[in-house]
Length: 152
Image (cartoon, rainbow, N blue to C red):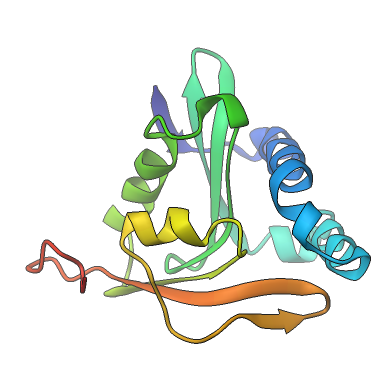
């Protein structure tokens, strides 16, 4: 498996993966408004141009993607269903964690993904929120280089 920064011409492939996984696993828990909000976000060049995209590849196939705003907020994080629970997400997260510019990484996790983020060492910082139909739990990860438990 190769994990790396994506080239600009690979962004469309990453967004298609995000959309496919979102529709299969996250969208069933969202209202029509939440789905529309997500679709608007992944179709907005203004929003997407503020993100840095990373990808995980098995051969030539993109099997996972993660996009950050600045280096410390995860905006999109999706792994192909066939490769979930095989270390793809952890590998993507470790690459981002190693380049973080502060000791805290944040995410607005969907309810579906909350257990995944908890397994990576994130903890909820408040209860579930609702904004424009998007259900999310604000979470943070402490990157303390000296604490191997990362605040757990």
